Image 1 (cartoon, rainbow, N blue to C red):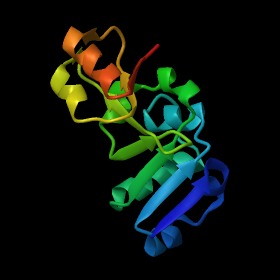
Image 2 (cartoon, rainbow, N blue to C red; image 1 turned 90 degrees about the horizontal axis):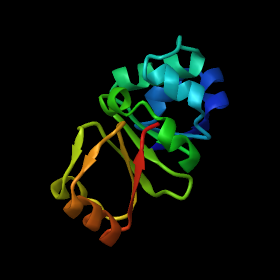
Image 3 (tube, rainbow, N blue to C red; image 1 turned 30 degrees about the vertical axis):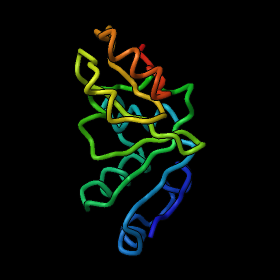
Length: 141
């Protein structure tokens, strides 16, 4: 089963009992400070500690992000974590930590967002495939 919580609810929750009852967590209304905590750019608060504990227990964690936050993601650091991302409408958000985006990277996706690290090299075929498959390419700021 999946528990759906906001960041505020996650910070106040008894995380151990929550993890014993649910196989996955969906966190909605994710904000930039929480993302910075997960990327190691900021000291951990209660919600950040709870998510690290959930990942340590092997619980599947999905974060729901507003599209306006996507350029601010620390792509390289967050891509290493066992997290999945989506927008509020359920469109998948994928992080691409490599410096080159090729057709093979885009071909397996259909719809959603692909967040790229700073100054990526995007091949012409990858750009065409992204348009054809309705994948929005977002560059990290």
